Image: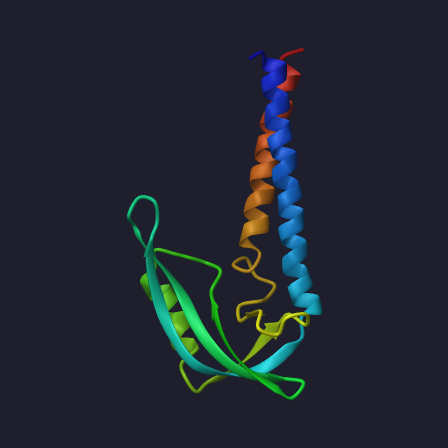
Length: 151
């Protein structure tokens, strides 16, 4: 494969990653701006343990909420979108959502069973779009640099 073709492969991958970043960022932004907030009671919360491909223990939070939308009561489980190898950080999150506590959560107006409890203008909520955007810029940059040096 010649340098020019290789550069276009890298640029193409970068553009696809940037498009995915834009889609994921728009979805997160939509949750923050269009999904209504409702006061919910925590019924249960726990740390869920799994493993990644290398066998490392990975943890996430699982929380079950009870809330009402337009007079109808819902009981919905939700899990954090982030898996980490840090048990203490997930345990702190689970402790924050102890049974009996109340929290504002966001729900999808099309499907009130679709909820998120970690929405906010922060890195953890926008981690995927930021990561994809960064990788898209890196791949596009490498492709552009290879293309520039191949002339």
